[in-house]
Length: 475
Ligand SMILES: NC(=O)C1=CN([C@@H]2O[C@H](COP(=O)(O)OP(=O)(O)OC[C@H]3O[C@@H](n4cnc5c(N)ncnc54)[C@H](O)[C@@H]3O)[C@@H](O)[C@H]2O)C=CC1
Ligand SMILES: O=C(O)[C@H]1O[C@H](OP(=O)(O)OP(=O)(O)OC[C@H]2O[C@@H](n3ccc(=O)[nH]c3=O)[C@H](O)[C@@H]2O)[C@H](O)[C@@H](O)[C@@H]1O
Image 1 (cartoon, protein in one colour):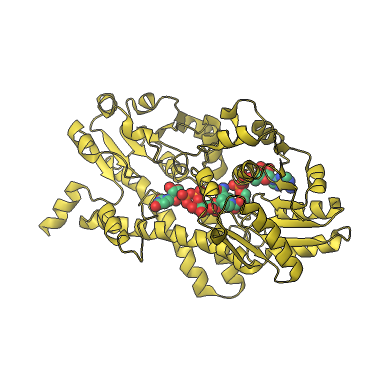
Image 2 (tube, rainbow, N blue to C red):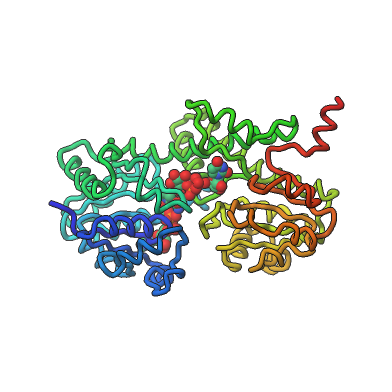
């Protein structure tokens, strides 16, 4: 039986782009993406493709091709579940903010709600696919709910974690390094796996589709994110040592990355990783390890988060100490607020934490980001609950023009690696700033020589300031 109808519950950063690509590549399958968030669905259905709720390069083209043909966005969850033979669950799985496992475990309430809704509505056999990132062994909980509350239809649970990165989602979905599908090792399980393999093999080469047991698949997703985040924390840990010793972290990264066993990717030192998943997934891994009493395993992975928090904090501290130990009343321009370039997503962005630290020091922050809305920035700060919403609005001003953001500033801090920052007229920025004019490049993207020649005092993550090195050399 070939799948003809797919339903995806959750029209977020994963559900939207993933299903758009499935619909684009499988014109014979009707794909309906459903969500309880009416505003989000309306945005997915917006005629003006620049209004889609997720900004991803190339996504508009994919949606344009498939939407209305075999790709639909709707709030009618029950109807879509009933119609589909295969249902993806792609809802959010944030870190728990209450009760047992608070601040560590994944909150699975949205997953459970989906499972109960599928069980209630389904009148024919369904393949249920975990697309959300889940703790290992969640499939057994979903299965138990489906089988105990369902209408005596058969359910097969598959794990099919998503590995796309934001900003390159369409590229990653079109040509994934691998598609991972985990399922039961029974004959029914294998048939279900094959149904999903058949969907992906419309465009993904067979050798890139990996099938495993369901627990390996669930755990591989957490492991992949933990390894990736660990690389960033590793290079960031070394960036601090570079700053003290006169080594340059970019040169070190290049030198080690040429070792084919290490490889060059994911070695870019930064102000700290952000994004909705790295921290959440590692905390979840730490929590799972702890629940099995594996304390050394838990401590090992927790260090990745500790290092990342340190990196964000020391970036803010360096701004304060360099600006003569006070930023009170000083305008600090932020270039970038998103957690990486080419996305409007700000979840866990380093910019939020650096801003929070500087606001504690009474700085006046002037932020510019080409894709992030003003209200989002305020919501990000308010979410931390450090101070009142009014105080956040007094401390942070949001600009639509980067030159205005930098005007009269004591310092510019680069928080996101947007390409356009490299192209700015830095002489114009320099001329309009307070002197000495400082730049703190948290992404290592600006042209150091050019900036120094213009008169800026330029600090880059992972590279010691000249004065620091001279002091060192005299010892
Ligand atoms: N953002 C990313 O780049 C990646 C995320 N993931 C994982 O994918 C999952 C989803 O992440 P995002 O798409 O970023 O989250 P998101 O928050 O952007 O989207 C989730 C959507 O699910 C909807 N939803 C929640 N409960 C619902 C219900 N009962 N019925 C209908 N809709 C419901 C929400 O309204 C929301 O629009 C998470 O588990 C995440 O860890 C995996 C790979 C990449
Ligand atoms: O599960 C997820 O959500 C996804 O998490 C990451 O994707 P994403 O967070 O979208 O973006 P990344 O490119 O991984 O960047 C994460 C953070 O690390 C930072 N980073 C990344 C790479 C690097 O070398 N240095 C560095 O500081 C980025 O600036 C960003 O803040 C993974 O790369 C995806 O494979 C995974 O599917």
